[in-house]
Image 1 (cartoon, rainbow, N blue to C red):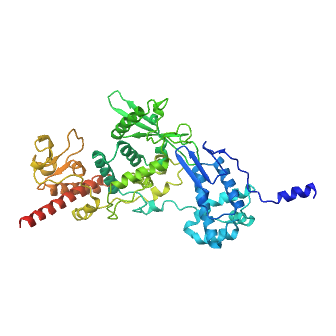
Image 2 (image 1 turned 135 degrees about the horizontal axis):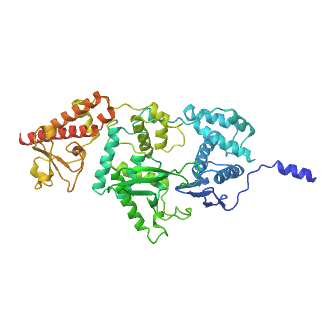
Image 3 (image 1 turned 120 degrees about the vertical axis):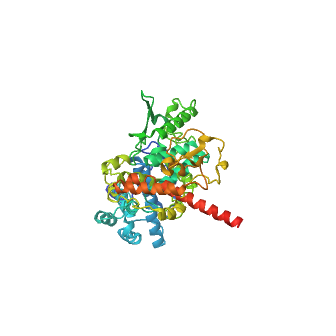
Length: 518
């Protein structure tokens, strides 16, 4: 055999890629490409690719698949790499199940069959794989037929439909209603007061509800990102330097955007951050570099992220805390479905309701452009136009806005011997007579008695003038609706439902007493 024939013979052999024993991913973590378990850590994102879980693949095809993924590991984010792995796994499983044979190649027929099987609404499954399969072929790797590449170049596939849950106000996957969000906030405050929720969980959940950022952004926060400016008049301004943690960037803290916090939440976050910093004195050379939401020290984490929780851990913590509140939705009559993305959607929806345009909403949600925020402006859900007594009574059992404790008489109050615990409402009742009690020790700056009905320290009396309060609130709502300020008119909707619930509880209590005493 001549030298030329040797070369030609070698060229005809399928190229499956050459993998090193150890390599560094784009995010900086070391992994072993030849192994069947890849473990990569990129900032706050942890990725494990288990090739043992794949459908049966021919050895050469499997090695080529690894080589294609290896290129992405060195040139793209770990999150994108994970998406490609799992989308490919679905395609491979489909072919294996269809042929009952090990997978050795992906052809145009395989792709057409897969496209038909997943249906029109899931074409984005294949759309997400198209670029990967074409790059696989461009790398000269075996496994993707020439006809498959030609087909992918011709196909016009639909991308993932975005915004459907927002546009339809989906009660399971879309934005929360105003009443749902207020109920979650009230329940979270009550759980924190009872110490069922710790400070870290409380701060994390409130920052999520206020800012609506992604879980990976909260995971990337450090103590030094909290800013406090003390003004000459004695007040303080609080801000948060939020890492952008963009998907295509391997450095979760490569860019930042400043967010202003309300004084109440800002003061709490600053106090919490100081406590975290104190915990890391002696552990880090600069304790201010400690993560705002720290976890256990992670082996293999890149420098600066050793004590950071992963985005998955942050997401799971949010879901666990908020689900434990067991808040009922007035729309479904069941416990509110919790997902961090819903809080993000709610921030965008409320901004649209307040009249903000696409540029402002994109800034709030930290989008690089306005492509994904148009749905908020186009699909602004309407405020409930009318809440009268009948509607309030119907919604009250579902909303569960009342968080206090009904008592029979003033002497049953927690602070019955303290005259400052008495609540009066002369503007509503026309007298200075007390109508209820407060069980809280210390100063309260909220408007009485409207804010009281949704407070867990509130102790309404059985014979209190709650009907007068309800009548007043509904009349005030109608007045504001008449002048066209729907957003302001709806502010006290939660309080209206809480008063209605108190009225119902009073009626039930009276019925029980009547039945007991004949």
